[in-house]
Image (tube, rainbow, N blue to C red; front, side, top):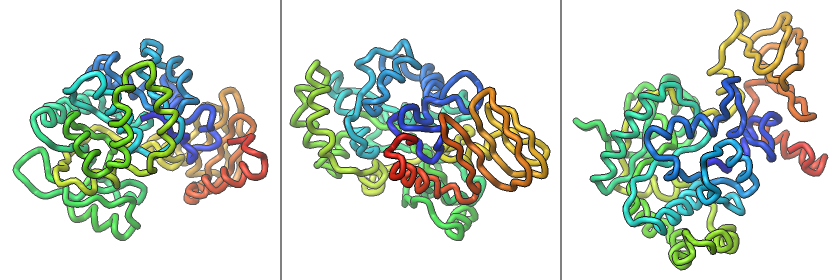
Length: 349
């Protein structure tokens, strides 16, 4: 899944080049390219599908040059993760009646790729033989309020039946979850076989499955793109978690520990980055900091920042926009983007 705009990383992430296409760590690889790199040992590149906004197809083909245009499925409108996944599954159904599927976002960071590949291989073996919906759960290390949580039933198995999902709890509840030992972070990485997930769409989201089934003869043909253009925007906006995972009875979680992070905010990037002796993070630029600590500074390459007296701020500049924002109030960035859109007719979004 590679269709988001990453507005919480504004102004670095913009509509014309959102965060999944950016190289945040100076490795020469974007988040999308890193995602494809870790999938390649598991899935032949010709079997990889990327679902994205139609505006980003050329960017994807530029960054993943050995993918064919037909492997990039373009949404004409953003309808959340359930329609996105249904589109990919319907496309696969037009090609084959049997497949095991990995669903992942293009903007997560995974530090131990060897362990990731081991866990995913194990999960694929499980879903190939069982009528289950499997998700990967990360052992929580702190009472994080920005992640979803999965409560599991204790069992003498690596694969645990899911009891409940909780989306982004408050600090007090997150502390309870951490201490209980019964909860994992929801990484948003799903594994299932083709028949099981499509049966789940039919049962729980018939308003999404129905239109795809009525147009099944067009999927996988030269008529597919026009068909998607004609119907996709009318699909309900719903996440896969709310639409299916929270309702189904055959949901399991496989605990994992491969250095996962949802790279969703400046704060999460700060947490993962190397820091100087004053706990400042400087990305892609030069910075002279005086009496300043706990900041993240990200400017376009070749620029210099001279900063005095800041504590706990985001200083980010890109493509004509400078943001200076308290790190502990970064949830307001979306509000800042919306206001800038109103004032400047979308020129800086």
